[in-house]
Amino acid sequence: MSVRIFAVEDDALTGALLRQYVGELGYEFAGKADNGEAALEEIRRTRPDLVLMDIRLHGAMDGVGLAARLRDDNATGVLFLSAYADEDVLARAKLTEPYGYLMPVGVVVPAKDRAHFLPYVTSDEHIRLSAMLQDTKLHIGVANGRSYGPVIDGLLEPLLQSGAAHVQKVYQGESTKTLTTMLGLNRFHYMLAYPIEAVFYQEPGNALLFYPVEGGDQLLEGRFGCTKGAETDRVFADVAQLVGSKKTWQPFLTAYERWLPPTLIKQYRKKLANLPKH
Figure: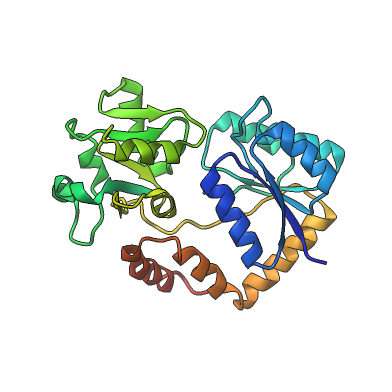
């Protein structure tokens, strides 16, 4: 019997990617909800084997609260997926007894405006974000409350704390989609996002370029975690065996590369080849 996986995610892009990847890996996609209340009802009804859980959700109940309810029900295992790193939220998440967390950036600019950013582009096509953020003529759009990783967060924090006028925050739930739309409307000059987000949201006639950030472009080591349970232990054992055998690496890589800008694929493969061999 195929493992059935349910997704709780309020971002349309992430939800679509989760559905695609779950199917490509041979599992059954049991359903999706974008808020805790609807998710709780659907999960109790469909009884999936595993729930992929975003922490920030629409509605009164966030992902941590939903995971706690599911733990009390002894309903299913939960895998947290989040781009947020709020310490209070993570402290609450620990109470749901997870094994760990996956804390899933670069600069996205309109291709037509490439010349504006050339002074900050290095010879290997990286962006010197630390210098560019000091240029108050170039306005940046960011998602409020989202962590972009320690390097970028460290550069942004002083500007956010001082209320810098050239940093524009977006508060909507689907923040990346909103930021991309605003970028196309020239509300600001550049934004921060993952490369697959730039590919997914760019519209015909509004091509986007993605630049890795100098000093912050190392491949992230994925960490999986979920609530303890016999079924999820079995699923993780299966995943560990598959990954350890290396037989499934190419499907993973192929699926990911389809969403990368073509200019990044060579660089991505080079970084993979340079990873320590185990």
